[in-house]
Length: 425
Image (cartoon, rainbow, N blue to C red):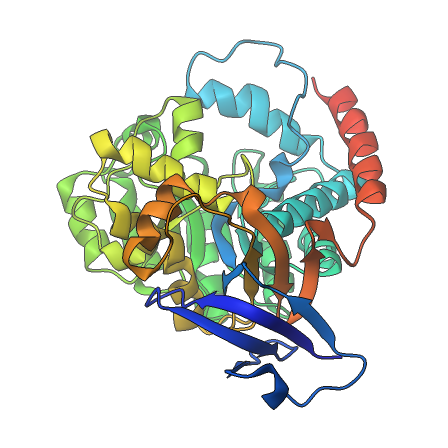
């Protein structure tokens, strides 16, 4: 069965050209789109799926540059036993408490909830950074399977850290290697202040062995820098560079709030990408991202597990950045789309031309190539996402997940959330 988008207004995601056309969408990773001026030119069969897109806009779907599946069941959870006074206590009493309570069922529920949220917000690809210290072995396979059930492509890693002892760090390394043997993925590290030189070196060796990159939190809080200077007599970016992590264009450094000019220069001249997560930074009161001195083409946007709405993340980056960043309409959209360039540059599968979103955007004002960026910032929202196509396959139709029962997923995730919350200390 072939998918055909009839009477579509196609917006080219790079040139922003608007084209009125009919689109034949080939199914399968890496397959192409075929455009027709006349509908009758398309050779059709009775079982083809034809969607009338009259008055709708079709463009490339979205991708998330940094996500956290493990936080999907956190919404509305009980308050921590102690009110955190700083970022380290936020980690200790909230996130490290939550991730330690995860098991097979709650990981699966978290992944299903995340994949469903991604799809309904127009994202067909997510780069995730996972942690479940008391259920490490096989955790990435669980997430991958859940994402594939919904139809969302992925680039996963396990968050390796020494914060729970050397045995857990070794298990994280083993899980990473086992996964990389059979899947596209990354080496995951938590942050410099929780990773020893010994573990860092082992991760670097695995990264090189599997021709991968590292996905690591960097200078999210000033403490990360203070710890690095105190224990290693260098700053975080310098430490990561010394281990060779910045030599790979697959490497993603997350946050990067507290960087000095030397670190910015190192990053600018490296191959690494940096993922901005403005809303999470605001929530944790750790500072503001600023792209000054960084390569504009290697800044991508993430959600940091707060939600799966990339249009919202782009708006947050733009609005907060008016005071704290060097960002404008064009660069906000560039950061929003740089993740596709990252995936293509590094040969990752699952983000080809046949990943599309159909937007039901009934604007009260003219909408076209010349003012697209104004609509991107002030108009387009995830509630305008009507249909979503992943690798040529319709995974959301009329805002409803197609290949799984949404009500069954939500029933499962709610039960697992309650069970997870009961385990929190």
